[in-house]
Image 1 (cartoon, rainbow, N blue to C red):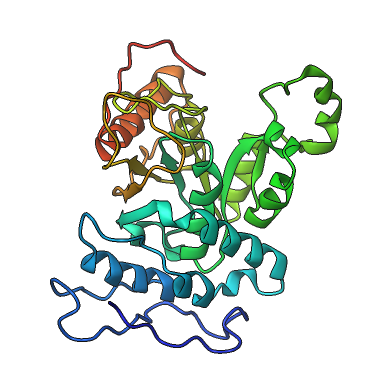
Image 2 (tube, rainbow, N blue to C red):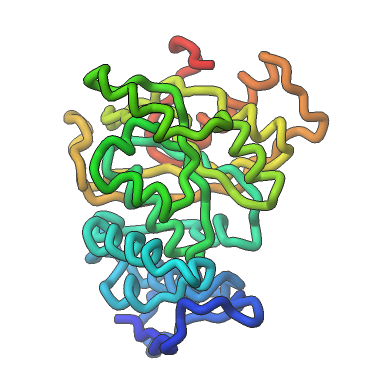
Length: 306
């Protein structure tokens, strides 16, 4: 077991100086190998050390102490948001059993676009919560469908995570579409995402655009993440979610144990070519890397989503 430093009483207060560079001490012999220091916020450094100690059949990556004790200085003054994030992780964080490359989404790398595969409905709630927690509460603005806010409690989760609402899919049953103006932003989602990137914040996107429970193949995907990257001139950090204990012959179930791997940033060409051919090529580059990280295949021959 790794030992962690006892948190200070004001752990969620905004720091007077950057928190980068602090790590979590471990007793000698706990780690299978040496862990180099990662200059990231406290919880990222602690998670890096914990990852080195984990084995394939290890228990959950996050402990109750991790969830409740890690500081979230970027959510200082927002106790409800901190409570929602911690509540989601207490409920579902045990599904995350291994993480690699977490330092690639550290706050000092903002702005970037995180692009990852989307296999279950609930992961769209607790994965963003995990990333918020890992980044000390600093938002990684995910783009998510407006109609999920019709589910009781989801609007509160959206506010806690500073989610960008996508006004694309209709509600079911159809009469609920009358609530659409109340639950959507007048500014289009990708315009809002471009504003966030221009302000130095990062954005999260599931390029597949919907839940895909196929354990072997990615969907063709939408071009939004690729186009936004080219337009804003920011890198894409690809990530793959795997389900190592799931049989490949059946559909991926909710709450299956998962591993997450963050790949190296993909830097877009400097010329910012926004032609359809350039966007398709960049989309293919992003999706191919997500496929590699998730252990799935991806084909550019499927029907195109624009």
